[in-house]
Image 1 (cartoon, rainbow, N blue to C red):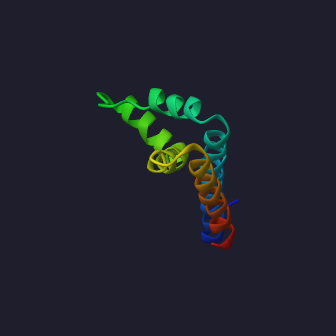
Image 2: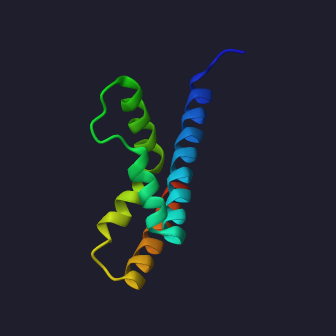
Image 3: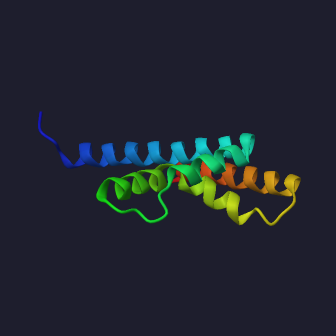
Length: 101
């Protein structure tokens, strides 16, 4: 079986869906567990990667779970209820946009 352009496009579509669902799932974990998941993200990222394995690890983490952390840190200046409400709104929008696209 040969790879055709429609098969490659379909595969890329599934990869993008998987990445967006992973980010959405991590965002909901941040919504439920808060600083526990944020601390997990901070521990899993190398501040100054020294070799290619650390750089690949950072790339993988930022590709799959970065968006929930980014939104949470931007909303950190609000109080707890407002922060959780805004994060839930962002996650709903983040879940709807891939469906539309």
